[in-house]
Image 1 (cartoon, helix red, strand yellow):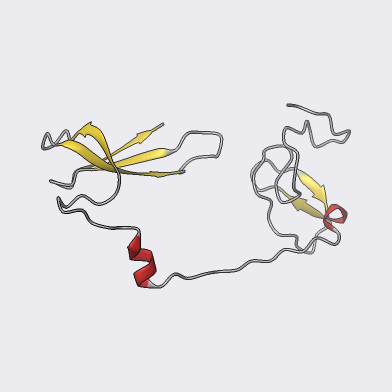
Image 2 (cartoon, one colour):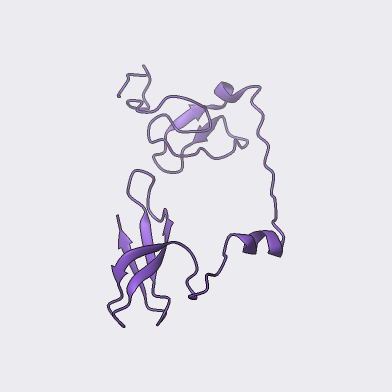
Length: 127
């Protein structure tokens, strides 16, 4: 939904928290010494006064090795992770493991990475 915001930034397509650009929806950078916060994607300028009283807090949490490896449980047949009915073009095995990742902008589909448990052949597909 497009709304007119009454300024020279252009139409606003997103509404919500100030951490996100109202024009393109991307995460805004932290404020610096200038009088504006400028979106790195679409160059929209937002007056720093709009962020008065807003507090930003970041926390970095590191998982220990055992906790991180709990999610990658190996089955008896050597397959790690979820599988899908897909034939490996290299060895012909039916059933490949897959993982997904957002490699492009948020308004585009994710990339699916397939891996053959037998020969290790890898493929990817942009959805």
